[in-house]
Image (cartoon, rainbow, N blue to C red; front, side):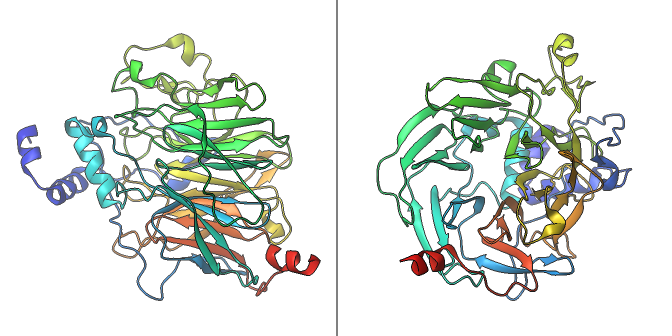
Length: 453
């Protein structure tokens, strides 16, 4: 098929053609999980595998399903593309209503046009609400009864972190700082720019996350790559594909770890105190490569991108090659499945659901580059002695219907004041709450405040 004919077809026709002519996976998705995933020979094709779950949203009365002993309910619904969550010390939940910013240079060429269609069909690339909402459950029934616009006029915001009385927000192009007062339901003060972050008209992986260290002295900021595997030129990757460390006292910033294609979720493992991240790996090597992963983040380490994947497996598509850097590439700790789009990460360190203590919840947004689909669920990875241990467990499923349509797509995950799991669903426009069946109410921070006063 000629490129001229490709461009003369409608988006729907293109999707049908690509889906129909690409081969299915030869391995079970379970083979691409764990510390030793199966890594077959790469299958690079002119036209990549495209297998999209069209975004539909939840029919009335429907919701995801969870495991025995747990229940799921809508903590808040009717949101506008909620992607990331942050729980304040007083129990209020911040949710970033956000989507990609305009990036005109990222949709050029055949692959760019394919990706634009993929994102549209998958329920992304909508106008960004560019705001953060505050959700408050004042009576402890597991449903937010207060919903206010907390911050607005942002620029594709994503990560959030409170340090003392300062709230840091990672926009797509900058790290901002805002004054915060406990129990406030809105911030109207103008923010202060702390740091410019890589963005611009290309800005392929636009999300930026931020987390503070336990001492509150440093911030760690994720920055994704500006391409799949450097196809836009390695000069476009300056300052990309890494985690930055920002010293709050001195305002100095440095690369903390590099070679991370698209790190999103970051968190401190409660047993060992080590920083961990969840990373989206590269596409277009077939349905059976490359697994997304989670890994401990070592100071000064290089994790392979773009020259190699899952340690020192060379990606021959990258020009020029860099064998010296490949020799330094660290192997990730734990694979999270091929093309699962693992994004959210929340370690569990409370007592409400003791079966999960010490391990990590992972929000898997779901595949477009694998046949059959993968991801579209929230999983739990057990830890022992500070390291992943055993196979992952499904926690929240049912996001795909029998037609392969996406009723919802999980993104960010967080642990609320009571120890329940919160999940941002950017297609269902809902924040879901997963808790034990036995928990009907809990003493909310608002109730405790009222008792003391």
